[in-house]
Image (cartoon, rainbow, N blue to C red; front, side, top):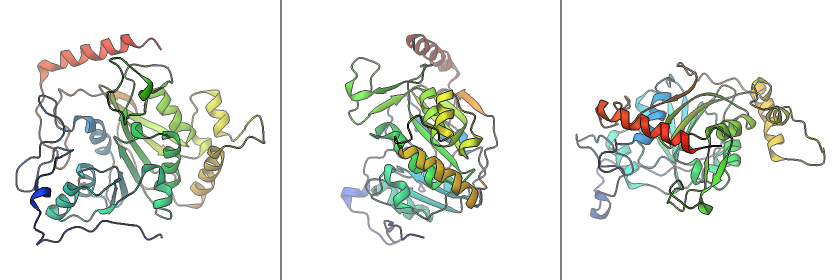
Amino acid sequence: MAAFRSAAAPGPDTIWPESAAEPSWFHAVELPDGRASGGRFAGRRPPNYTLYGVFDLLNAIDLHGLTVIDVGAMDGLLSFGLKLRGAAEVLATDLVARPNFLRLRDELGLQVDYHVPCRAQDLDRHFDGLRLDVLVMAGVLYHLMDPLATLLACRRLLPRDGLLLIETQFLAGAQAPVARFNPAETGGQASPHPNVYWRMSLPALNAMLQICSFEVLASVQLKSRVAVLARAARPDEIAAATPKIGTILAGRRADPSYHEAIQDALAQASVDTDRQPPSRARYAAARGPRRRWMAQAAPDWPLQPRHPAAPGRLWAERAWAACSELRWPV
C-alpha cells in the first residue's frame, strides 16, 4: 500500500492561537462543549440543509467494518459522523488543511486520517493500492473542470459493490440529459459563484455514472441540490439508459483507431471486479429518485444541530418545486 500524506492532529495540550481560535465555520456542528458552530447558512435556512440527502442515504448503509473516504471534508461533519456511525476506517481529503477539522478531531478524539493537499481528480493516484468500500463526495463535483474524469478516478478506487455517494448542484426540474457551463451563463438561474463550472440535470449525471461503470441506486433531491448513490458494477451488469450508453459499456466503437480513456477504465473495471473480492457495503432502503424538503426535521446524523420541522413552510417549498419544473422546457 502506498504511503499516504496525512496532516497530524494537534495534541491534547495544544493552545489554539487567537487567530485560529474561532475561524469561520463551513458546517454547523454540535461542539463537544455543548455549543453549536454557526455554519455558512444564516437566517431561516436550516443548518447543513444541502447535506440532508447525503444523511438520508448514509443512514441506509451499515458502515460497521467498512473503509470510507470523505472527499472535500471541510470542517469534517461527514468525516466524524462516518466514524461515529461505526466505519472501521475513515479518510478525509481537502485542498488545504482546515483549522476547524483539526480542532474537531482533537476535541472528539476520533481517528480520521487527513490527506491534504489532495485534489478530487487525483484520488486514484493519491490512494493507489487502497481498498475502499464507500466514497462520499459532497459539494465538489460542480466545482470541477472535468467531472467525468473525476468519476472515472472514483470508479478506479472502488471494487465491485463499493458505493459512491455524490452530492452536487443540479438543474432542478430539467428532464433532458443536459449540462450547462455556468461561467458563460447570465440571468437569475445561473449560480453567482465563479468557481461553479458545471450544473447538470439528474438524467445527465445518472448517464455519466453509468458510462463510468456505476449502477445508480437512489437519489434525493432538495431544491437545487441532489445526492445520488451508485454501486460500482461490471459494465455488463448495468441496464443502460440509452443505446449509446450500452455501446460504450460494451466497449464497442465505430472506429477502432479512435481510442478513449473511458474504454481502458471500463476494461479495467471488468478485470478488477473479477480479481478483487467485492465490497460488503450494502444499501438497505428504497431505490429510485425521491424528494426531500428543507421544512422537514433535520435528519438524524452525529454532530448535526437539531432543526425542528416547519409544517407551515412545506406548502411554499412544494410550490417552488412545481414552478421550477414548469420553467424547464427541456
